[in-house]
Image (cartoon, rainbow over all chains, first blue to last red; front, top):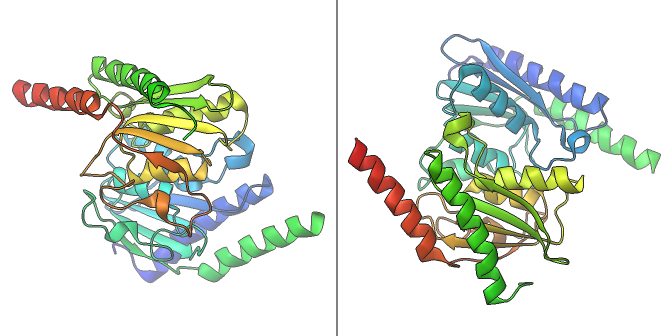
Length: 158
Length: 158
């Protein structure tokens, strides 16, 4: 890991702020931030836009990865640390592998789709051509609370 | 499977035609077609655009899925059959799961990243909320020849 615990929490807080933007649009609150771990520069952010766009691909990580590729002009996100409030699903874990993101810091674990420890761990599959470093559980309670409140509110409205 | 062997080969030929477009732009030749299996309508196509866009997400399947979501106005691609010339990588297998594509027909197996039988099989993971039907090896020789010629040409130029 490139950053201290305190720095990891600061960058995760930015990802949580993105999750709150998603929530304000009625989206499942998940957010992401990508940081250049050589300079600490914020390269990109993203939040879940699946419902707004009606596009199955538009998870927070995918949007942040696409924005990062656009910003640096390359599909190779080496030297990047990706912060996301929820354990990546297989699509996002695969996108992280494909884009060569160096390390992933995630918040809450996701027993329903999490593919970095919960259901399986795609980052430990040595047959893929890249294995990102990873750590989970950073500000996990804040992320889980956001999600629980969101789904509670949806059930209440129904 | 919804279609006959002959229909599967016809739709795979369309995906191969997309792969050839990719090749004409200097991209690794991989193509995809999505068909509504209730009507046989061609919903969308896509080809690998990773180098042109310098965007790690822009695999053939992702582009076809995004185009299909845009066309039908929904992130749920139920009743859709996806044809792709190469076994999906984990990102694309995950995108197919997330978008609820009903069945996947692929061409050549991919020992380096294939996640529908080669390295693992994400479509058989019952903990994910959707398990697409799948079959591999359709017009596999045509797909493999395209890829082999492409990489041979790249090595020759180097």
